[in-house]
Length: 305
Image 1 (cartoon, helix red, strand yellow):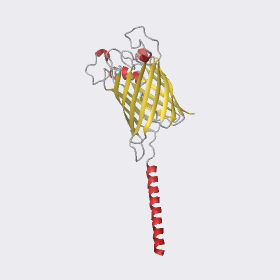
Image 2 (cartoon, helix red, strand yellow):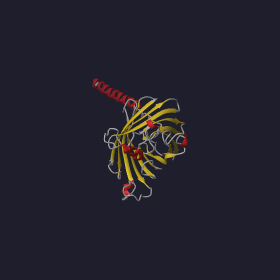
Image 3 (cartoon, helix red, strand yellow):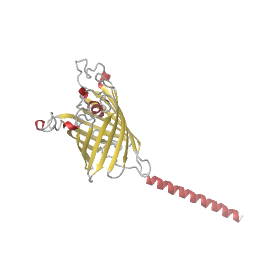
Image 4 (cartoon, one colour):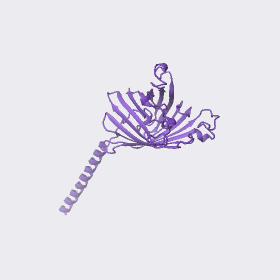
């Protein structure tokens, strides 16, 4: 009998030891898989949405401006290098419904044929990059745009707006990003832009791929860039049938980002005249090589609600 008691106590101690080891390993794994923070400093990088999310109950008030052509036939001294013209202007806000769901609303002037644009956006985070775990962050982005401009009297115009639905355009994209180090982050995206009304011969659905990067230069200064590449339609550089009259260009931007803690300021240079995806993806015709890029800026200020 004494031997049995000793064996029972031994088994009990072994179970406790095993339980303790499992608990310690689990805690170590969970500790190692801390979420990677600040893949990007802002929810937008120049014109492209990023995987970065607003925390719950945070309000982001945003103002963006794109001036006229810096050089070329419409730029230079006569327009003070584009500063006397406004290609597009945006004002709006975004709100963190939760740490993984953001919504937003904005108004832009519009740089394409569709003017006076109102945009509603939603972004949902599916995956977060983890230290020692999930290698990327993954978010879905959606936008609905409606033109509130006066209807054209020309039946051949895209702004004739025979139906209210013809005022609308939509964009959806899947964003995947990785923060490789404290200095460098990279994002790739795949998107679809749909317009209910398009010019004759154009495509309603435009498929596009995107690239975004951020390179931290100093504690508060980063170099940022974005590109959106249309893969079909007359907008695509891979379309050999593109007419010289529809000389679309790939939107490319480069800029400087200043993060002061309270707000983020972006100074950018881009050939895109429009600010929002439903505007610049179908309608960018400005050519970097011809000096048809513009200076722009974006100010983002966060508030607690």
